[in-house]
Length: 250
Image 1: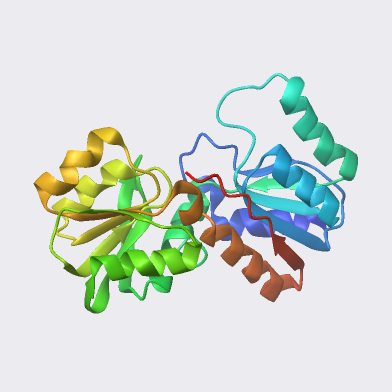
Image 2: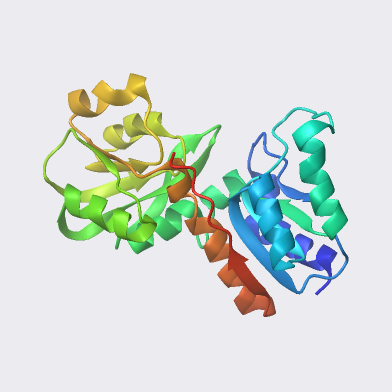
């Protein structure tokens, strides 16, 4: 299909204009006009660009793109990144906050459904918008069983700060780096909060507020959205896709 038609569809589907975000969401690097094969990854980095060249894809869709609210000199590793894409005719499309918040293919909605949560509602305020989801577990579930399920989904062991009771019936999720959102989870009476990476200054909050917190990895909690988006594009347009897994351990 035509690159510009795909970009227009993505912009509309993800509602990229609806969210305040320092990420330059949308088409960041323009490649060839036709797109027949796509790839997705969490991070726009030299490693994933090299993967894209080796796989012969026409467009790479990432959660973390190249541009974050300030101009970059096109030299050194930045030049190498952009040159790699341009030389291969590969387009780069980025979707940051819009892909966290999306109710169908977003990181948080997908992860909540994978954990068996129901009655999902937007949760996790960020600059005036909700970017996560909250819901309930149909039956009381041990917090460590939730952590084990996260491990099955990501292949990584989660960090559990069990500030609350052993059984949980409700939870909120904000992927990535949202440790302070545990305050909102507590104020909304949730039993559990899940995010990616911990912060030292938040450690005691979980135990003093008596809320359970699971840290499942920044990278690992943000693999769900790009893969769900790629599957949606395959259904919608018949595009072949692949996922480049480049875990950071964080």
